[in-house]
Length: 381
Image 1 (tube, helix red, strand yellow):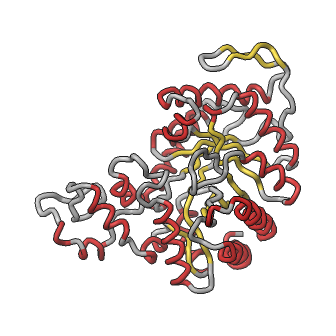
Image 2 (tube, rainbow, N blue to C red; image 1 turned 90 degrees about the horizontal axis):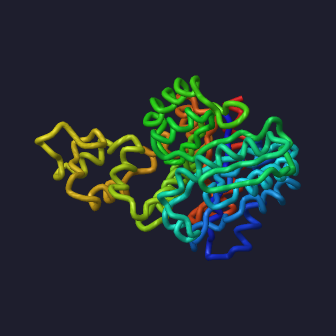
């Protein structure tokens, strides 16, 4: 199993320059400590939350400062960009890194889409069309295209990628329908929903089976599965777990971009985290539904009364249970090894850590990166 870092480039005290400098320092250390991948999101308009609108720019710097770590677009929002420009930019970074680039793809969310003048109803078709075009651009001497959203007369598009036939292609996925689509298209899954490995295990098995019949959009099938978690390693097991759990809950807190305008989001997060723990069922026993077998989280707590109860239970979800279930890979090295092995057992190819968030200081991230490299990774060699 391989290990990666994910970056939203969140902004402590809104200091843009500090975030950029700290991020570069962290990635350079990750390269030295044996991390296999680093992935950068593409976000727009998310003031105070994310400052990563153009991964290819920071990749220009990192291509010269790192030696072995792979640089992943995590992801390119295809509806925002002309496919020719995407093909050119990814290929250029691939040359700068001597072939260390992966290209994740996605569609983003309505708030950002409308800000870019994109109708959210069009984004699925736009993603599909662009996804078909880009591998053809990379592998054609002269490329031409007549489609619904883009038209290109016969043109040569340079550079071609350094990797042959082209960099691996992925898709950001939050639900089973996207896992199935990835298998059909022969591209890797980036499961970004932050789920317990026990929840994802049957979906990983289905993906493995379905991708055997893929009709790949590219020149080869990328049959890799990536699972995203919050990760943090430190000398104090309890304190590090609590810090990581707080980072996770802040990230998905009320009004934050990944939960905004979503219905029943906290009930669904409880499902993704493996259901309501037994001790929280007991704490909320006054809400037990005696007329039914259970609720969507397979517990005796009735969440049908609205989102407030689900949110309250979610807020009280303790760090130890999150770590023991593998929702976070956090604590001292032994704890991190145990949690990572839960993911490894499900057949995950890459475990991606979101480590540098607005609630985790730069020095804690640097300490964590070093401890993963020195004490956790050797258990997976």
